Image 1: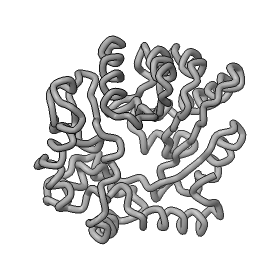
Image 2 (image 1 turned 90 degrees about the horizontal axis):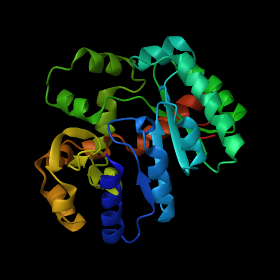
Image 3 (image 1 turned 45 degrees about the vertical axis):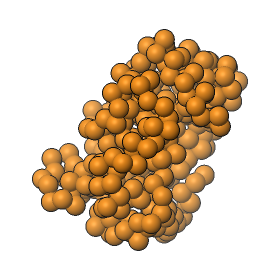
Image 4 (image 1 turned 180 degrees about the horizontal axis):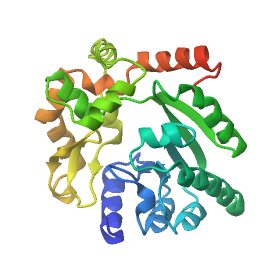
Length: 281
């Protein structure tokens, strides 16, 4: 998204959402790849808004220095292993060496600029990597980062395909085979929370780089609107509530699949039993 478009989007959001306090600068890509990210962070800060960045940190960018210097409030780094074996197996095309180098660089830059950025390493648990959580915790503690853990799971779009008995492509099949909690068990747990609200409504609207609006951050195949500026936030929410995709997702209880309470309990019990460590450090 261009800086010009971003500024227009920001101004419209601030006008229509009086309690807006945080901008999530990511959807279906890595924000650290954006050449103007430091300017965007400063633009948010000037309006009293925080910038939430989520990255796998497996990128080569000359902007890392400027990004940390711009002092974003929150940086979440996803990770699915310690060392090249599991990390590179779980993240296609990723390189452990680059990730590790960038972790140390972020730590160095935060100290250099005395940045207030809160960094969290989010560890995705699979059948193969669970014992490596200890190493990730140590890495986080050595660099002053928080560490948390959650389940590696099949993306909701593919979970929907599974429910509808659609064939899963090879990558989705592999991901499902590595899940530490059975998919059917997770879907059953979601059904028990069917009457609860969709947690992803909190992050709405989901605006693409081309100004189109998605129903949800979990599905990128259906657009809710072609242009964010053609509709008010109120109209977009009403369109979302009428959306066939949202109704279908809720009918399968997939609106709770990623946020089901029993997953949190499952992760806590699993980690304490295998590593002796809690899922939040």
